[in-house]
Each structure stands twice: as structure tokens, then as C-alpha cells.
Length: 128
Image (cartoon, rainbow, N blue to C red; front, side):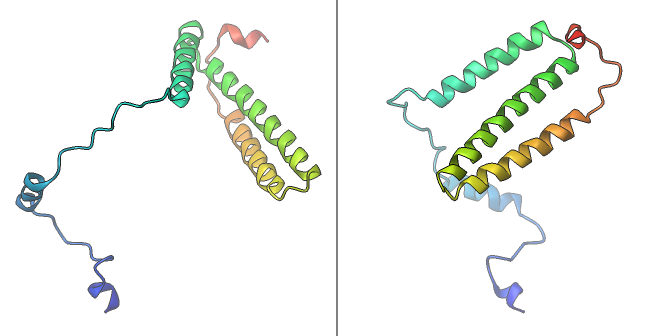
């Protein structure tokens, strides 16, 4: 009985298109954020990554190359987490366990990706 009377858990059987259109008429216009006053370095980083991926894909068309790149990046990220966890442990910082736990997650992601079979997809990068 509680679930039926609780407005937070009520789910209607259907939605009226007319009701939705009436709501749209009264709705405020979409929010448009103001121009940023400072340079957003996150956007610069994202643009740089996208540019790198575009160049990488032009030079290496095989999925094997993408897999190798991902494995290398996961390896680097895992090593960084491992070193950080060890440093935080030596500093008696409780967050060392979080860093070590994340390193284990990265290791699991590496192991899962490493098992992905790409079939007979060959490329020049297989000659390493």
C-alpha cells in the first residue's frame, strides 16, 4: 500500500502526448551557458587526445595496433597507481588502499583486454 501512495515510486501506465506538449509550451528555453572566462585545460587535453587518435588511426588501421596502444596505456596507468599507492603507504596515508585497489582494477582491465581475440587481423606493429 505504501508504494502506491508514495509519489516518488509511482510509475504511470502511459504518458499522454498532449500532456507533454502542454508542458513544452510552458517550459523555459534551453539553458545556454555563458562563454567561459578562463581557458578550460580539460577541453585542451580532450582535443589533444582526439587529434592523437585521429593521427594514430590514419597510420595504424588495424585493431591490433589499437589494442596494443590500450594495453600500453593501461600498463602505464597501473604502474603510476602502484607507485602512488606505495608512496602513500610510506607516508601513512590511508588513501594508499584506494590507490592499490584501483591498480588492481586496472590490472583486471588489462587482463580482460589482453584476452580479446582479434582473429587474423595483422598489421606492421605485430613485428615487435
